[in-house]
Length: 427
Ligand code: AMP
Ligand code: MG
Image 1 (tube, protein in one colour):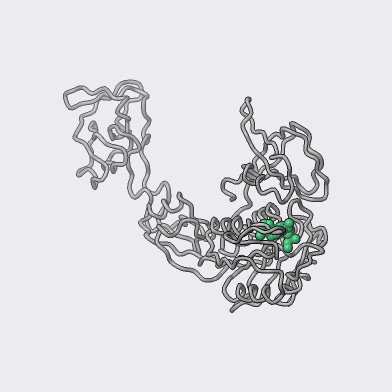
Image 2 (tube, protein in one colour):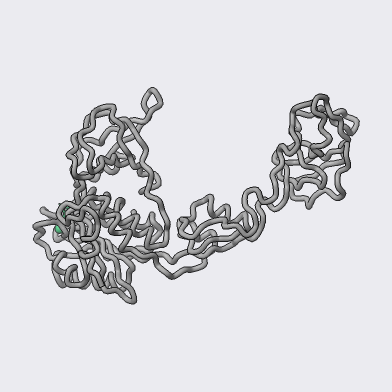
């Protein structure tokens, strides 16, 4: 068995003291294997769950040729190319009816509503607004307003029976749920929910309800991180605040490893920490401690603890509130999606013009809190929220996205385009 340090050492550019952010992602992609267990849930329970297997369509969608417009169903061959075409109206067919009885003969047509089954013999719908009603049971279709085959939806044109409607690894959003419903499928097989334990560490960290005392701060990470976890659709085990005390840390990590697929902690992993988190983590599992070439962020621990049946993933995030959120979004979020079987592509950044200069040293990735707005000329522009200290949680509230200044990138001049990962869809 290779240790995590050995696996990491095989990655390009591996340097535990200045690890490129991209390398962390590549490492986690190798480390995290999807959960094997699945469950079958009703569509009402399936939002944001990850499809465990391909879903093959049990039927053609739409199930029959039907009208795409309100109008008259007719035989395309009856249309005269250069002159008006007069047709006899046999009657009307409505959505929900099984169809028109006998085939429509040449020279005739049927009034039809959107979604109604096309009568046999008809292959074209002329929209009602193009037609002159003779008032005598006939209509006249002017030349050139429709071509044969127009305004008709073909059976199976969305999806043919037996074809994959959805693929394993897809996270089910509203459109996918609608598609499953359109196939008549009341339930769906998804990967089981991951169980993720969380605790904050630090002697200075107070829980809500505790009276404030000098030297103490309230625990914000517990609320930002458990909220981010809930957004991912995982089952959260909130283990509260754990003191910088080896016995308490060991007990919390053991409890997390026994109950969860992954444990996320904050605090206690930075260089020169007075606390004991690192020593205890090392004792209970195979853990690497990194300084990542990023800002905010930097210290992070990744490991595997002896769990029940399978190893429990460990993500030891920095204590600084912004650093904890950013490292969660950049590394833990994709890792947990992968754990739940999601084949999620990385979020796509948008490009916006920087409204201000930004100092940036090549050799690390920076995530500045940005506010994207639309400029007077319609283009997107972005400014920072100001002070970018990794403890300034307010900056995450004011921002609507993260400006990503890439590893090799240098200073940004006003007007330069930069990548921004919008929070909508990410957080
Ligand atoms: P650490 O990573 O433990 O060295 O903590 C870095 C900074 O983040 C310190 O200023 C801590 O007080 C602060 N911090 C640690 N944990 C939390 C937390 N749960 N909520 C808010 N701030 C925290
Ligand atoms: Mg600490």
